[in-house]
Structure formats: C-alpha cells, structure tokens
Length: 285
Image 1 (cartoon, rainbow, N blue to C red):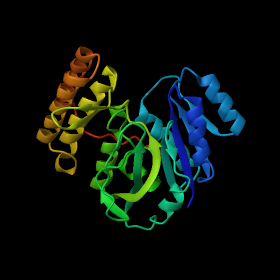
Image 2 (image 1 turned 135 degrees about the horizontal axis):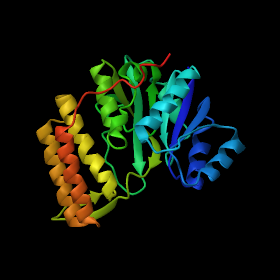
Image 3 (image 1 turned 30 degrees about the vertical axis):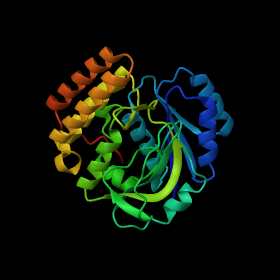
Image 4 (image 1 turned 60 degrees about the vertical axis):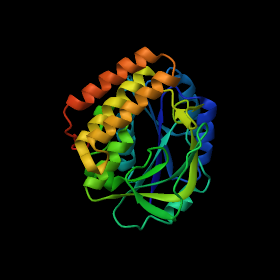
C-alpha cells in the first residue's frame, strides 16, 4: 500500500514546518506540498529544493479544500492508495502510520483518524475502545482512502476554508463509507488561538478566530446542516450552537463588532445559498 503525505502551506513558520516534515518523512513513501500563495515562498522553495520534495504552487489562495484536492490528484497520479492530509503545523507521532496500518483492513474505510492534543486546549476524548466509527474526523493527520475520495468527488471547494472536514466525512457516510477513529494520540496541533475563561462555575474555551474566519465558520456549518440533516446536525441544533458562539464572542473575544457582523452574514448565507455538492474530480483520469 503506497502512502503519500500532502501538506497544505500558507505563510508557514518554517521551523514548525521542518518539525512537521521530520516527524512524517520516514513514515510515508513521499511528501507533496501545496502552497496557497505564501508571502514567504522563497523560504519554502529553498527548503523543498534542499530536501528534493515536490511543490505545487498557486498564484492565488483558493482555500484549503482546493489545496487538498490538488494534493489528492497528485497522490492519485503517483498511484498512491492512501493520502495523509496534514496542516503545516501538524506534528505527528513517530508511530502514527504504524498504528493506522493495523486498521487498514476494516470494512468500507473512507478515512482513518486519531486522537490529538491541542497545544492550548484540554480536549476530553472518548477512548473506551481501540477503534470506533465516527461521524467526524479532523482533516489534520487523517489517512484518506483515495478510492473513496474519488468516489465522493473530492473536498468541497466552495466551502473555501472552514468545516471542509465536516462535509467530507458526511459525504463519505452518504456514499456508504465509514470514518474510523483509533484510540491513539497521533499528533499535536493548535486549533485557532484558544484561550480559557471562567464563567458561572464553568470553564469556557474560545478559539479567537479572525472576523474573516468567523464568516466561513457560520456559513459553512449552517449550509452543511441543511445539506445532510440528521447525518450531521439538524438545522435547529446548528443554529442553537451558532447562538452559543455569538454569546462567547460578545463575552470574551476582541474585535467583537467585525466578528459579529461577519458571523450574522455567514448564518444568513448558510441558510439561503445552494446546498448542492459538486463533483470536483469529474475529469480525473
């Protein structure tokens, strides 16, 4: 089974990227990079040339979903069977692929994912079994079955950046595939810029995403709820969660007005825009 790692880049911290690559390089057959028009492209090119890796460059940032599809296509044309999707700041466990290989014969695998540690958050995971089916796999360090990726039409590029993984998981399930989570701490990463707050006898975490990101978070999650319904969240339940996020922004985050304005616009667009999912791989030979 050939495994290729794909790493999406956008203005990466080169030191963290090197740490990322050092962790994954001995575990996969090849590493391919996709750069989303980074301002430090010269640094990236120098690093990639030094290591003799493949780099795909874009003259515009078309978003994470487009980058993942381009990496998936490159892996497909390299005749890979599996595609490890990595963010630029994802540092995987040195035994991650070894653990994944134990579960590659599970029925109808769409993708395998694992438990992770956030550098800023204390996430509580259900680790009661060695492996379980799950409705959601985070894109970072997920091992994607390229056959399944092709069958669902790739990642939804219209989403641009947020909830791309939510949509992909639901699309796999709708096609009869399963997302499996293994009981293994497979990588370290940061989601947003999380901070902890105490509110009415309870700890509350906020991810402090930018106003730009807040629009896509609201829009895409509402759109996905409409697209898949019970396979993800109902529209009502998703709307209630968005209201909770609005309260958190008001109470704890900076730049409140810009974030709230974008969040409300995102909710409205998510409730009104077309929900049809395109196939981005129709021309894949």
